[in-house]
Length: 316
Figure (cartoon, helix red, strand yellow):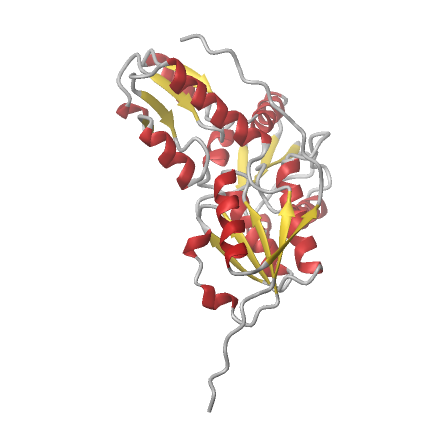
């Protein structure tokens, strides 16, 4: 009996936009600039500058030391705050250590920090939709730790108990799934009609664009979605989740060479996208990998992204 040969996909749908968002690009450009201006000096970064192993490794080779505890940073050192934002307590600790600080917080994350501070100042209790241990959530909650509840799912909403007179507000981690968040918001508004939201949604537009891209790829026939991104990247995990909720298989990979080609056997159409912290070279590697296997690549345009975020002044 002749063994049937497994077929490799002949068609790849490539989502656009994909990879770096404006906030990530700003953070990376900023840490690059600090490295250029301070060659030979030790530079520290509080948490990973962005949640991507390739990016972190690149800066480690340049001498950047990533820490999760400021006690590991010598007094007077240069310290960069990651793109995910940090709490006032960390800022104060850095000041007490006389550290030379540069803030790479994404402006859209800074927006949620400001919302939390303003709501707390006006005696609101804040419901924060986010992942409890994520760097962004930890930093945001630190703005008003005694006036905020972090909610991750419907079960936790059921456990909430507030009077009808309690002033309530609602803010959101920037990298969540738009659809899942909408469901949580509906339930919160149903239980607490008095809850107030900021004028503009907190979920980053780039995050929404990439999630919309996954939906489009599945609708166009992608049976498998490959998401390039690191396992600790919230927005990359949300892309995988969006694909799975639409009935497609999905794989989250740091790089395309981590993929077992057998997983794509007898699949006709594959969708390819990347989380907002994945560098372009990893996307190019993936495209080349598929092209070498005689796979046709078709780019699917979802939205235009032309946002450029200015770098802060650096005085070191």
